[in-house]
Length: 177
Image 1 (cartoon, rainbow, N blue to C red):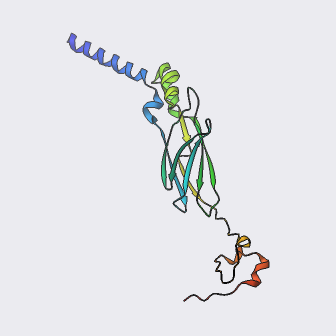
Image 2 (image 1 turned 120 degrees about the vertical axis):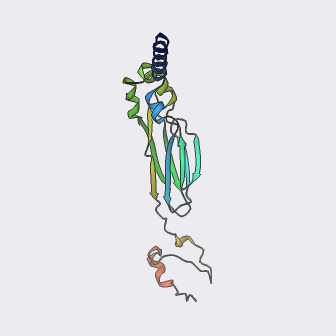
Image 3 (image 1 turned 135 degrees about the vertical axis):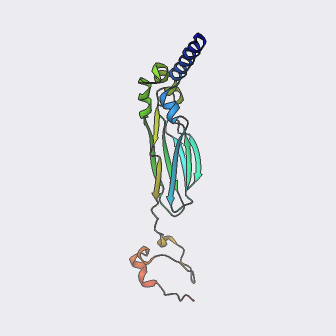
C-alpha cells in the first residue's frame, strides 16, 4: 500500500512539473501560423515580406498555405505584408499582424510563470497571426490601347468600354468564323 501511494505521489508530482514547465499557448496552438491564401483568378504569386527586417520570407502560387513564425523575438509579435500579384491585375497588399493568443492567458491556470514569462514568449506561441484565411478577387487592369503601335493590319482585341472615345470611330468590325 505504501508503494502505491509513493507511485501516485511521484506521478502527480511529475505531471504537475511537466504542466508547469510548458506554456499553455505552446501546448494548444504552438508551431508556426498556417495562413490560407486564395485569389481569383488562381495562379497569382504571393510574396511574403517580414515587416521588421524587410526580408522576403516566402513566395508561393495561389492557392497556397503559408507557414509563418508567430513571434519576432522575446515578447515581440511578428508582422508581415503579403503581396498578391498576377500579370494583367493590380497587386493586392494585405497586412498580417500579431496579437496575443487567448491561450496565453491559460498560463494563469496551468502554465504558471515559466509558461507565461519564458516558454510562450520565446517560442512566439503567445501570439496569433491573422487573418488566417485570405480570399482576394484581383482587380483587372484595363488595356491601354492608346499606347499600342497601330500598324496597318494589326489586330487589337479589347473591350469596347476600354477604347478611348477618340478611337471609337476608327474601329472596324471583325467577322469570326
